[in-house]
Length: 395
Image (cartoon, rainbow, N blue to C red; front, side, top):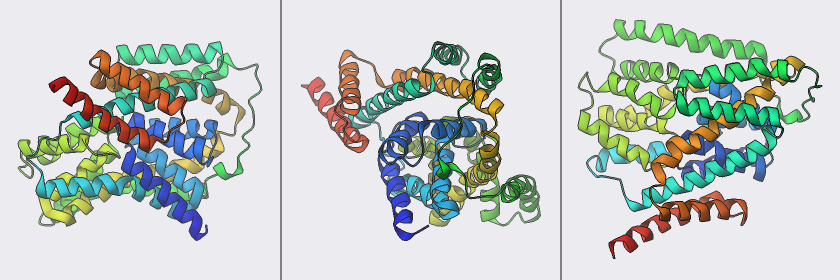
C-alpha cells in the first residue's frame, strides 16, 4: 500500500468522523455514500455483505464496517487508519468535555437540526440499498416483513433472529436461480484464515484472561479499566445505545463516576459525530484523565478490531459459495428492512415532531438525492436551519 492510499483512507475516515451525526444506522448511510458511491472502493453487494456480517458480531457495527472497509482497502494499516479517522474526533471532543463541560447541557436547536439530517441520510440509504438489494417482489417482501417485525419486537436478539431467518429462507426462495459470481478482486481481505483464527483466539483469550489478571493485580487502575471496558465492548449486541447499561453498571455503582457525571457525558455524546462507543473516552477521562480516556477507548474498541479481522477471511471464503450467496439475498433484504425500521424508530421518532421538522427533513433529503450535495454540507445546513427554526419559533 502506497502513501497516497494510506492518506486517502485516513482522509475519508476523518471526514466521516467529523460529519457522521445520527448514530450507527445513519453512519451506514454516510459510509455507503462515501465508500461505495463516491469512491467506489467496494460495490453495493460487497458493502451489504460486510454490513450483514457486522450485524452478527457483538460490538459497534458501524465502526466494524469502517474497520472492514479499511482492511479491504489497505490491509492492517488501512484498518487502523480507518478506525482512527472515524473515532478520534469524537473521542477527543468527549475527553475535552470531561475536563471542561461536564455540567453544560448540550441539548439545543442545532442538535435537533442534526437529527433531521440523520432522517434524510438514513432515508437516502434505505432508498439506494432497497433498489440494489431488494429489487424484486420476494426480497422486497422480506424487507417489509423484517421492518414490521423489528418495529413490533425491537431488540438486538430480534435483529439477529430475523437476519438468520432471512438467510435460511434465501436458499429456499432462490434455489432455482443461479447465484452471480463476485467480481471485485479488491474485496478480498489481505488476511489468511490462519491469521484470522489467531485474531479470534486472542479475542476469547482476553475475554477470559483479563478478569483473572484484574483479580491478581487489584491495585492496577489501567488493568481494571481495560478489563471493564473490554467486556462491555465484547458482550453487547446492537452497539450504540445498547452498551450504555453495561457501562453504567461498570462505573457508577463502584463510585468511579457519579450518576450526574454519567448523564452529563451521555448528553455530550449525543452532540458529537462518530460512534457512540467513544462515550468510553469521556468516562475514562473522568476516572483517570487523558491516560484513562486512551485506555478506555482502546479497550472498548479492541473486541471490534479482533472480531472483524478474525471473521472477514472466513466470511470472504463463505460468501463465494452458491448456497451462501443465495442466503445473502435474503440476508441483504433483511438488512434493508432493519434499516427501514430504524428510519422510523429511533431516527424519525426522535427528530420529526412538527410539520416544520418534516418539511426541513424533506428539503435535506432532496439536497442529498436530487441536488447531489455532499453529506457534510447537508449536516452543516441542517444545524443552521435547526437554529434558525428555533429563532423563528421564539419571535
